[in-house]
Length: 490
Image (cartoon, rainbow, N blue to C red; front, side):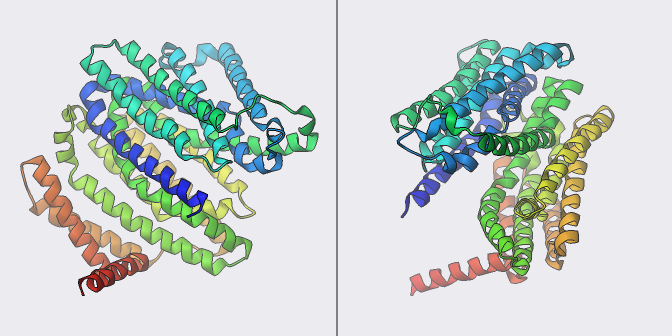
Protein backbone atom coordinates (compact mmCIF):
# COMPACT_ATOMS: atom_id res chain seq x y z
CA UNK A 1 0.00 0.00 0.00
CA UNK A 2 1.45 3.37 -1.06
CA UNK A 3 1.93 6.41 1.14
CA UNK A 4 -1.04 8.22 -0.44
CA UNK A 5 -3.38 5.29 0.24
CA UNK A 6 -2.12 4.90 3.81
CA UNK A 7 -2.45 8.60 4.59
CA UNK A 8 -5.90 8.73 2.98
CA UNK A 9 -7.19 5.80 5.03
CA UNK A 10 -5.69 7.12 8.27
CA UNK A 11 -6.90 10.68 7.70
CA UNK A 12 -10.39 9.46 6.72
CA UNK A 13 -10.54 7.45 9.94
CA UNK A 14 -9.61 10.57 11.91
CA UNK A 15 -12.30 12.49 10.01
CA UNK A 16 -15.02 9.95 10.82
CA UNK A 17 -13.98 9.85 14.49
CA UNK A 18 -14.18 13.65 14.57
CA UNK A 19 -17.66 13.50 12.99
CA UNK A 20 -18.81 11.07 15.71
CA UNK A 21 -17.36 13.28 18.47
CA UNK A 22 -18.93 16.36 16.87
CA UNK A 23 -22.34 14.67 16.73
CA UNK A 24 -22.10 13.68 20.41
CA UNK A 25 -21.06 17.24 21.26
CA UNK A 26 -23.92 18.85 19.37
CA UNK A 27 -26.83 16.68 20.46
CA UNK A 28 -25.84 15.58 23.96
CA UNK A 29 -23.06 17.71 25.46
CA UNK A 30 -23.94 21.20 24.21
CA UNK A 31 -27.67 20.75 24.84
CA UNK A 32 -26.88 19.51 28.36
CA UNK A 33 -24.34 22.18 29.29
CA UNK A 34 -25.72 25.32 27.61
CA UNK A 35 -29.09 26.97 27.34
CA UNK A 36 -30.18 28.02 23.85
CA UNK A 37 -28.73 31.55 24.15
CA UNK A 38 -25.37 30.28 25.42
CA UNK A 39 -25.21 27.72 22.64
CA UNK A 40 -26.10 30.41 20.11
CA UNK A 41 -23.25 32.64 21.27
CA UNK A 42 -20.89 29.65 21.37
CA UNK A 43 -21.65 28.85 17.73
CA UNK A 44 -21.66 32.51 16.65
CA UNK A 45 -18.11 33.09 17.90
CA UNK A 46 -16.80 29.98 16.14
CA UNK A 47 -18.58 30.70 12.86
CA UNK A 48 -17.34 34.30 12.86
CA UNK A 49 -13.77 33.09 13.37
CA UNK A 50 -14.14 30.59 10.53
CA UNK A 51 -15.54 33.18 8.13
CA UNK A 52 -12.81 35.73 8.88
CA UNK A 53 -10.14 33.05 8.52
CA UNK A 54 -11.54 32.03 5.14
CA UNK A 55 -11.68 35.57 3.79
CA UNK A 56 -8.64 37.30 5.31
CA UNK A 57 -6.27 34.47 4.47
CA UNK A 58 -6.50 36.34 1.12
CA UNK A 59 -6.93 33.16 -0.91
CA UNK A 60 -3.56 31.73 0.16
CA UNK A 61 -4.97 28.30 1.11
CA UNK A 62 -5.82 27.78 -2.58
CA UNK A 63 -2.29 28.79 -3.53
CA UNK A 64 -0.48 26.47 -1.08
CA UNK A 65 -1.17 23.23 -2.95
CA UNK A 66 -1.55 24.66 -6.47
CA UNK A 67 1.84 26.41 -6.62
CA UNK A 68 4.02 24.30 -4.30
CA UNK A 69 5.35 22.09 -7.14
CA UNK A 70 6.87 25.22 -8.69
CA UNK A 71 8.75 25.95 -5.43
CA UNK A 72 9.64 22.41 -4.32
CA UNK A 73 13.33 22.12 -3.49
CA UNK A 74 14.49 20.52 -0.24
CA UNK A 75 17.94 22.08 -0.31
CA UNK A 76 16.65 25.67 -0.46
CA UNK A 77 13.75 24.98 1.93
CA UNK A 78 11.43 25.34 -1.06
CA UNK A 79 12.65 28.85 -1.86
CA UNK A 80 10.94 30.34 1.18
CA UNK A 81 7.44 29.31 0.13
CA UNK A 82 6.24 28.83 3.74
CA UNK A 83 7.76 32.17 4.75
CA UNK A 84 5.85 33.79 1.89
CA UNK A 85 2.61 32.13 3.06
CA UNK A 86 3.07 33.41 6.59
CA UNK A 87 3.84 36.90 5.28
CA UNK A 88 0.54 36.88 3.35
CA UNK A 89 -1.34 35.70 6.45
CA UNK A 90 0.15 38.50 8.53
CA UNK A 91 -0.89 40.88 5.77
CA UNK A 92 -4.42 39.49 6.00
CA UNK A 93 -4.51 40.19 9.73
CA UNK A 94 -3.28 43.74 9.12
CA UNK A 95 -5.94 44.30 6.43
CA UNK A 96 -8.68 43.07 8.76
CA UNK A 97 -7.56 45.31 11.63
CA UNK A 98 -7.42 48.34 9.35
CA UNK A 99 -10.87 47.66 7.89
CA UNK A 100 -12.35 46.95 11.31
CA UNK A 101 -10.88 50.13 12.76
CA UNK A 102 -12.33 52.22 9.92
CA UNK A 103 -15.78 50.58 9.90
CA UNK A 104 -16.21 49.57 13.55
CA UNK A 105 -19.40 51.63 14.02
CA UNK A 106 -21.21 49.52 11.39
CA UNK A 107 -20.33 46.12 12.83
CA UNK A 108 -23.12 44.30 14.75
CA UNK A 109 -23.00 44.69 18.54
CA UNK A 110 -22.83 40.89 18.89
CA UNK A 111 -19.55 40.94 16.97
CA UNK A 112 -18.07 43.88 18.85
CA UNK A 113 -18.99 42.37 22.23
CA UNK A 114 -17.11 39.20 21.30
CA UNK A 115 -14.33 40.80 19.28
CA UNK A 116 -11.29 39.39 21.10
CA UNK A 117 -12.57 35.82 21.13
CA UNK A 118 -13.40 36.01 17.42
CA UNK A 119 -10.12 37.74 16.53
CA UNK A 120 -7.95 35.17 18.32
CA UNK A 121 -9.96 32.31 16.82
CA UNK A 122 -9.57 33.86 13.38
CA UNK A 123 -5.77 33.90 13.74
CA UNK A 124 -5.58 30.36 15.09
CA UNK A 125 -7.88 28.89 12.43
CA UNK A 126 -6.16 30.74 9.59
CA UNK A 127 -2.66 29.52 10.51
CA UNK A 128 -3.86 26.00 11.36
CA UNK A 129 -5.54 25.60 7.97
CA UNK A 130 -2.50 26.95 6.14
CA UNK A 131 -0.09 24.67 8.01
CA UNK A 132 -2.42 21.73 7.32
CA UNK A 133 -2.52 22.33 3.56
CA UNK A 134 1.23 22.91 3.53
CA UNK A 135 1.74 19.53 5.25
CA UNK A 136 -0.37 17.87 2.57
CA UNK A 137 2.33 18.77 0.03
CA UNK A 138 4.56 16.22 1.79
CA UNK A 139 1.78 13.58 2.00
CA UNK A 140 1.61 14.20 5.75
CA UNK A 141 -2.03 14.84 6.63
CA UNK A 142 -3.00 12.37 9.37
CA UNK A 143 -1.38 14.00 12.41
CA UNK A 144 -2.26 17.55 11.27
CA UNK A 145 -5.85 16.34 10.80
CA UNK A 146 -5.83 14.99 14.36
CA UNK A 147 -5.06 18.48 15.67
CA UNK A 148 -7.16 20.44 13.18
CA UNK A 149 -10.26 18.27 13.33
CA UNK A 150 -10.38 15.59 16.05
CA UNK A 151 -8.65 17.55 18.81
CA UNK A 152 -10.82 20.62 18.18
CA UNK A 153 -14.01 18.54 18.52
CA UNK A 154 -12.74 16.91 21.72
CA UNK A 155 -11.55 20.24 23.12
CA UNK A 156 -14.85 22.01 22.47
CA UNK A 157 -16.72 19.20 24.22
CA UNK A 158 -14.36 19.51 27.20
CA UNK A 159 -14.96 23.27 27.30
CA UNK A 160 -18.72 22.73 27.55
CA UNK A 161 -18.35 20.02 30.21
CA UNK A 162 -15.97 22.21 32.25
CA UNK A 163 -18.60 24.98 32.21
CA UNK A 164 -21.32 22.60 33.38
CA UNK A 165 -19.47 20.58 36.02
CA UNK A 166 -16.82 22.99 37.32
CA UNK A 167 -18.83 26.22 37.31
CA UNK A 168 -16.55 28.13 34.97
CA UNK A 169 -17.82 31.55 34.01
CA UNK A 170 -19.17 31.72 30.47
CA UNK A 171 -16.42 34.16 29.50
CA UNK A 172 -13.82 31.63 30.63
CA UNK A 173 -15.50 29.01 28.45
CA UNK A 174 -14.95 31.23 25.41
CA UNK A 175 -11.29 31.66 26.39
CA UNK A 176 -11.15 27.86 26.72
CA UNK A 177 -12.46 27.63 23.14
CA UNK A 178 -9.72 30.02 21.97
CA UNK A 179 -7.14 27.89 23.79
CA UNK A 180 -8.41 24.75 22.03
CA UNK A 181 -7.87 26.32 18.60
CA UNK A 182 -4.50 27.80 19.61
CA UNK A 183 -3.30 24.35 20.74
CA UNK A 184 -4.44 22.93 17.39
CA UNK A 185 -2.34 25.57 15.62
CA UNK A 186 0.65 24.84 17.86
CA UNK A 187 0.28 21.08 17.33
CA UNK A 188 0.40 21.32 13.52
CA UNK A 189 3.27 23.83 13.70
CA UNK A 190 5.38 21.58 15.97
CA UNK A 191 4.68 18.61 13.69
CA UNK A 192 5.95 20.61 10.70
CA UNK A 193 9.09 21.44 12.66
CA UNK A 194 9.69 17.84 13.75
CA UNK A 195 9.39 16.69 10.14
CA UNK A 196 11.90 19.33 9.05
CA UNK A 197 9.39 21.16 6.86
CA UNK A 198 9.27 24.49 8.68
CA UNK A 199 11.36 27.50 7.73
CA UNK A 200 11.00 31.28 8.07
CA UNK A 201 13.41 31.73 5.19
CA UNK A 202 12.31 34.01 2.35
CA UNK A 203 14.06 33.87 -1.03
CA UNK A 204 12.78 37.08 -2.59
CA UNK A 205 14.65 36.68 -5.88
CA UNK A 206 12.66 33.52 -6.64
CA UNK A 207 9.39 35.46 -6.48
CA UNK A 208 9.50 36.91 -9.97
CA UNK A 209 6.86 39.28 -11.28
CA UNK A 210 5.34 36.49 -13.37
CA UNK A 211 5.07 34.13 -10.37
CA UNK A 212 3.59 36.83 -8.16
CA UNK A 213 1.08 37.77 -10.86
CA UNK A 214 -0.02 34.15 -11.35
CA UNK A 215 -0.31 33.62 -7.60
CA UNK A 216 -2.26 36.87 -7.18
CA UNK A 217 -4.78 35.96 -9.89
CA UNK A 218 -5.32 32.48 -8.48
CA UNK A 219 -5.53 33.79 -4.90
CA UNK A 220 -8.00 36.49 -5.96
CA UNK A 221 -10.26 33.88 -7.49
CA UNK A 222 -10.03 31.84 -4.26
CA UNK A 223 -10.75 34.94 -2.18
CA UNK A 224 -13.96 35.69 -4.09
CA UNK A 225 -14.97 32.02 -3.88
CA UNK A 226 -14.45 32.13 -0.11
CA UNK A 227 -16.62 35.25 0.12
CA UNK A 228 -19.38 33.65 -1.94
CA UNK A 229 -19.20 30.41 0.03
CA UNK A 230 -19.43 32.28 3.35
CA UNK A 231 -22.41 34.29 2.17
CA UNK A 232 -24.07 31.14 0.89
CA UNK A 233 -23.42 28.64 3.68
CA UNK A 234 -22.73 30.54 6.90
CA UNK A 235 -24.88 33.62 6.51
CA UNK A 236 -27.92 32.24 8.35
CA UNK A 237 -26.17 32.06 11.72
CA UNK A 238 -25.21 35.74 11.59
CA UNK A 239 -28.52 37.06 10.27
CA UNK A 240 -30.55 35.03 12.77
CA UNK A 241 -28.36 36.41 15.55
CA UNK A 242 -28.50 39.99 14.29
CA UNK A 243 -32.23 40.02 13.52
CA UNK A 244 -33.47 37.76 16.32
CA UNK A 245 -31.27 36.63 19.24
CA UNK A 246 -28.53 34.28 20.42
CA UNK A 247 -31.27 32.01 21.76
CA UNK A 248 -32.78 31.65 18.29
CA UNK A 249 -29.29 31.00 16.90
CA UNK A 250 -28.90 28.12 19.35
CA UNK A 251 -32.16 26.54 18.15
CA UNK A 252 -31.26 27.10 14.50
CA UNK A 253 -27.79 25.59 14.95
CA UNK A 254 -29.26 22.32 16.25
CA UNK A 255 -31.52 22.09 13.19
CA UNK A 256 -28.54 22.79 10.92
CA UNK A 257 -26.44 20.13 12.62
CA UNK A 258 -29.17 17.50 12.33
CA UNK A 259 -29.69 18.03 8.60
CA UNK A 260 -25.93 18.31 8.19
CA UNK A 261 -25.79 14.56 8.82
CA UNK A 262 -27.38 14.09 5.40
CA UNK A 263 -24.27 15.21 3.54
CA UNK A 264 -21.88 12.72 5.16
CA UNK A 265 -22.25 10.60 2.02
CA UNK A 266 -21.81 13.56 -0.32
CA UNK A 267 -18.17 14.47 0.29
CA UNK A 268 -16.69 10.98 -0.36
CA UNK A 269 -18.77 10.53 -3.52
CA UNK A 270 -17.85 13.96 -4.90
CA UNK A 271 -14.16 13.48 -4.06
CA UNK A 272 -14.17 10.22 -6.04
CA UNK A 273 -16.17 11.67 -8.94
CA UNK A 274 -14.07 14.84 -9.30
CA UNK A 275 -10.89 13.39 -10.87
CA UNK A 276 -12.95 11.09 -13.12
CA UNK A 277 -15.06 13.98 -14.41
CA UNK A 278 -11.95 16.10 -14.93
CA UNK A 279 -10.28 13.34 -16.95
CA UNK A 280 -13.40 12.71 -19.04
CA UNK A 281 -13.81 16.42 -19.79
CA UNK A 282 -10.17 16.68 -20.79
CA UNK A 283 -10.71 13.83 -23.29
CA UNK A 284 -14.08 15.23 -24.38
CA UNK A 285 -15.87 12.04 -23.29
CA UNK A 286 -19.19 13.73 -22.65
CA UNK A 287 -21.12 10.45 -22.65
CA UNK A 288 -19.06 9.35 -19.66
CA UNK A 289 -19.58 12.70 -17.93
CA UNK A 290 -23.34 12.37 -18.51
CA UNK A 291 -23.30 8.86 -17.08
CA UNK A 292 -21.49 10.03 -13.93
CA UNK A 293 -23.87 13.01 -13.66
CA UNK A 294 -26.94 10.75 -13.68
CA UNK A 295 -25.48 8.00 -11.50
CA UNK A 296 -24.23 10.47 -8.89
CA UNK A 297 -27.64 12.16 -8.88
CA UNK A 298 -29.62 8.96 -8.33
CA UNK A 299 -27.21 7.62 -5.69
CA UNK A 300 -27.04 10.85 -3.71
CA UNK A 301 -30.80 11.35 -3.93
CA UNK A 302 -31.41 7.75 -2.83
CA UNK A 303 -29.23 8.13 0.25
CA UNK A 304 -30.41 11.70 0.90
CA UNK A 305 -34.12 10.83 0.92
CA UNK A 306 -33.44 7.83 3.15
CA UNK A 307 -31.54 9.96 5.70
CA UNK A 308 -34.13 12.75 5.65
CA UNK A 309 -36.88 10.16 6.10
CA UNK A 310 -35.06 8.67 9.10
CA UNK A 311 -34.57 12.12 10.62
CA UNK A 312 -38.11 13.40 10.04
CA UNK A 313 -39.95 10.26 11.19
CA UNK A 314 -37.86 10.19 14.39
CA UNK A 315 -37.60 13.93 15.00
CA UNK A 316 -40.02 14.03 17.96
CA UNK A 317 -38.24 11.12 19.65
CA UNK A 318 -34.87 12.77 19.00
CA UNK A 319 -36.05 15.91 20.82
CA UNK A 320 -37.18 13.68 23.69
CA UNK A 321 -33.81 12.01 24.20
CA UNK A 322 -31.45 14.97 23.80
CA UNK A 323 -30.94 16.98 27.02
CA UNK A 324 -33.33 19.95 27.26
CA UNK A 325 -34.79 18.91 23.91
CA UNK A 326 -38.03 20.78 24.54
CA UNK A 327 -36.10 24.05 24.16
CA UNK A 328 -35.21 23.18 20.57
CA UNK A 329 -38.55 21.88 19.25
CA UNK A 330 -39.15 25.31 17.74
CA UNK A 331 -36.67 24.25 15.08
CA UNK A 332 -38.70 21.20 13.96
CA UNK A 333 -40.06 22.74 10.75
CA UNK A 334 -36.64 24.28 10.11
CA UNK A 335 -35.20 20.75 10.02
CA UNK A 336 -37.62 19.71 7.27
CA UNK A 337 -37.00 22.81 5.13
CA UNK A 338 -33.20 22.62 5.46
CA UNK A 339 -33.39 18.89 4.75
CA UNK A 340 -35.28 19.55 1.53
CA UNK A 341 -32.65 22.13 0.58
CA UNK A 342 -29.97 19.48 1.08
CA UNK A 343 -31.93 17.11 -1.19
CA UNK A 344 -32.02 19.71 -3.96
CA UNK A 345 -28.25 20.08 -3.65
CA UNK A 346 -27.79 16.29 -3.72
CA UNK A 347 -30.05 15.58 -6.70
CA UNK A 348 -28.06 18.02 -8.85
CA UNK A 349 -24.96 16.05 -7.79
CA UNK A 350 -21.74 16.93 -9.62
CA UNK A 351 -22.94 20.04 -11.46
CA UNK A 352 -20.37 22.21 -9.67
CA UNK A 353 -17.58 19.75 -10.48
CA UNK A 354 -18.54 19.60 -14.17
CA UNK A 355 -18.44 23.39 -14.46
CA UNK A 356 -15.35 23.70 -12.25
CA UNK A 357 -13.23 21.39 -14.41
CA UNK A 358 -14.45 22.81 -17.70
CA UNK A 359 -13.38 25.96 -19.52
CA UNK A 360 -16.44 27.65 -17.99
CA UNK A 361 -15.08 27.31 -14.43
CA UNK A 362 -15.61 31.01 -13.68
CA UNK A 363 -19.38 30.49 -13.79
CA UNK A 364 -19.19 28.69 -10.43
CA UNK A 365 -17.87 31.86 -8.83
CA UNK A 366 -20.59 34.02 -10.37
CA UNK A 367 -23.27 31.52 -9.30
CA UNK A 368 -21.85 31.37 -5.77
CA UNK A 369 -21.81 35.15 -5.41
CA UNK A 370 -25.36 35.27 -6.78
CA UNK A 371 -26.39 32.69 -4.19
CA UNK A 372 -24.90 34.83 -1.44
CA UNK A 373 -26.75 37.95 -2.58
CA UNK A 374 -30.02 36.03 -2.94
CA UNK A 375 -29.56 34.59 0.54
CA UNK A 376 -29.10 38.05 2.06
CA UNK A 377 -32.19 39.46 0.33
CA UNK A 378 -34.32 36.43 1.17
CA UNK A 379 -33.26 36.49 4.84
CA UNK A 380 -34.02 40.19 5.14
CA UNK A 381 -37.49 39.55 3.71
CA UNK A 382 -38.50 36.28 5.40
CA UNK A 383 -36.95 36.43 8.90
CA UNK A 384 -39.06 39.40 10.13
CA UNK A 385 -42.21 37.63 8.88
CA UNK A 386 -41.57 33.96 9.71
CA UNK A 387 -38.79 33.98 12.32
CA UNK A 388 -36.54 30.87 12.15
CA UNK A 389 -38.73 29.29 9.49
CA UNK A 390 -38.09 32.40 7.38
CA UNK A 391 -34.33 31.86 7.62
CA UNK A 392 -34.78 28.24 6.52
CA UNK A 393 -37.03 29.26 3.61
CA UNK A 394 -34.44 31.83 2.54
CA UNK A 395 -31.78 29.13 2.45
CA UNK A 396 -34.07 26.73 0.59
CA UNK A 397 -34.99 29.24 -2.11
CA UNK A 398 -31.40 30.36 -2.56
CA UNK A 399 -30.09 26.81 -2.94
CA UNK A 400 -32.89 25.88 -5.37
CA UNK A 401 -32.16 28.89 -7.61
CA UNK A 402 -28.41 28.33 -7.32
CA UNK A 403 -28.65 24.71 -8.44
CA UNK A 404 -31.21 25.43 -11.15
CA UNK A 405 -28.85 28.05 -12.58
CA UNK A 406 -25.92 25.60 -12.66
CA UNK A 407 -28.03 22.75 -14.05
CA UNK A 408 -29.48 24.96 -16.80
CA UNK A 409 -26.01 26.28 -17.63
CA UNK A 410 -24.67 22.73 -18.03
CA UNK A 411 -27.65 21.78 -20.18
CA UNK A 412 -27.08 24.79 -22.46
CA UNK A 413 -23.32 24.21 -22.79
CA UNK A 414 -23.10 20.41 -22.78
CA UNK A 415 -26.68 19.21 -23.53
CA UNK A 416 -26.73 16.93 -20.45
CA UNK A 417 -28.82 16.87 -17.26
CA UNK A 418 -29.11 14.59 -14.22
CA UNK A 419 -32.87 13.97 -14.19
CA UNK A 420 -34.47 10.56 -14.81
CA UNK A 421 -37.65 8.62 -14.03
CA UNK A 422 -36.04 6.77 -11.11
CA UNK A 423 -35.99 10.02 -9.13
CA UNK A 424 -39.80 10.08 -9.23
CA UNK A 425 -39.98 6.47 -8.08
CA UNK A 426 -37.70 7.31 -5.14
CA UNK A 427 -40.02 10.15 -4.14
CA UNK A 428 -43.06 7.86 -4.28
CA UNK A 429 -41.24 5.19 -2.28
CA UNK A 430 -40.20 7.72 0.36
CA UNK A 431 -43.71 9.16 0.65
CA UNK A 432 -45.27 5.69 0.92
CA UNK A 433 -42.89 4.54 3.67
CA UNK A 434 -43.37 7.83 5.52
CA UNK A 435 -47.16 7.42 5.58
CA UNK A 436 -46.88 3.79 6.67
CA UNK A 437 -44.34 4.30 9.46
CA UNK A 438 -45.39 7.73 10.71
CA UNK A 439 -49.10 7.04 11.00
CA UNK A 440 -49.27 3.31 11.73
CA UNK A 441 -46.27 2.74 14.02
CA UNK A 442 -46.78 4.44 17.37
CA UNK A 443 -44.43 3.66 20.29
CA UNK A 444 -44.25 5.81 23.42
CA UNK A 445 -40.69 4.98 24.48
CA UNK A 446 -38.46 7.29 22.37
CA UNK A 447 -35.51 4.86 22.26
CA UNK A 448 -37.67 1.92 21.16
CA UNK A 449 -39.51 4.19 18.75
CA UNK A 450 -36.29 5.31 17.03
CA UNK A 451 -34.95 1.76 16.89
CA UNK A 452 -38.11 0.11 15.56
CA UNK A 453 -39.02 2.84 13.07
CA UNK A 454 -35.46 3.07 11.76
CA UNK A 455 -35.16 -0.69 11.26
CA UNK A 456 -38.54 -0.82 9.51
CA UNK A 457 -37.65 2.12 7.24
CA UNK A 458 -34.25 0.65 6.37
CA UNK A 459 -35.62 -2.80 5.57
CA UNK A 460 -38.45 -1.47 3.39
CA UNK A 461 -36.35 1.19 1.67
CA UNK A 462 -33.42 -1.07 0.85
CA UNK A 463 -35.50 -4.07 -0.24
CA UNK A 464 -37.81 -2.07 -2.52
CA UNK A 465 -34.91 -0.03 -3.96
CA UNK A 466 -33.05 -3.19 -4.89
CA UNK A 467 -36.15 -4.98 -6.20
CA UNK A 468 -37.00 -2.01 -8.46
CA UNK A 469 -33.31 -1.49 -9.32
CA UNK A 470 -33.60 2.23 -8.57
CA UNK A 471 -29.81 2.51 -8.47
CA UNK A 472 -27.64 0.22 -10.58
CA UNK A 473 -24.67 0.82 -8.26
CA UNK A 474 -26.59 -0.05 -5.08
CA UNK A 475 -28.07 -3.16 -6.71
CA UNK A 476 -24.60 -4.24 -7.90
CA UNK A 477 -23.19 -3.81 -4.38
CA UNK A 478 -26.03 -5.93 -2.98
CA UNK A 479 -25.57 -8.69 -5.59
CA UNK A 480 -21.83 -8.77 -4.92
CA UNK A 481 -22.35 -8.87 -1.15
CA UNK A 482 -24.97 -11.61 -1.43
CA UNK A 483 -22.74 -13.75 -3.62
CA UNK A 484 -19.91 -13.49 -1.11
CA UNK A 485 -22.19 -14.43 1.77
CA UNK A 486 -23.47 -17.51 -0.01
CA UNK A 487 -19.97 -18.51 -1.16
CA UNK A 488 -18.71 -18.23 2.41
CA UNK A 489 -21.59 -20.39 3.65
CA UNK A 490 -20.76 -23.08 1.16
